[in-house]
Image 1 (cartoon, rainbow, N blue to C red):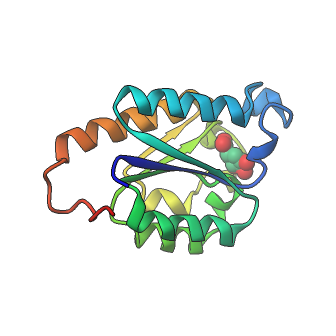
Image 2 (cartoon, rainbow, N blue to C red):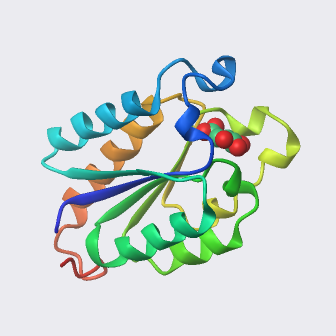
Amino acid sequence: MSGVIYIVNGPNLNLLGAREPDIYGHETLDDVHRLCEKTASASGLKVKFLQSNAEHQLIDWIQEARKKALAIVINPAAYSHTSVAILDALKSFDGIVAEVHLSNIHRRESFRHRSFVSTRADCVIAGCGISGYRFAIEFIAQQHKNYKNCAILPQLS
Ligand code: DHK
């Protein structure tokens, strides 16, 4: 399944549009899904769009991506700031990792300033709202084009 990007969304993002819209905006997770599909297809790529409130489920999807995806776009939501387990799962993934936060976590409470995931991410986008997902996919498409023949890319099944 080459050309697939896993889009992994963490806890409470299922409430996007209804939850603290002054911080996270009025668009829903379905809007994000549509935006991701559209952006990826413009570069001949596909997405597998996922959301869970459970840390173990996010880890299982990241592990699944090891054999199935060329890249992961992840918004770990609150797990960004707490989860060494998600960081470790991402470290087992050889493809491109793009970290997205809808809000600018650096302008918010200090406990949001550190993200464990950032130490593995190839790019980090924060504060751009749902456009952050578009930028992440465009980054991946560009990297994929540049490094298509590079030996460090994972073997895709
Ligand atoms: C989403 C969340 O749910 C928060 O826990 C993070 C992130 C920020 C976001 O901006 O997308 O702190």
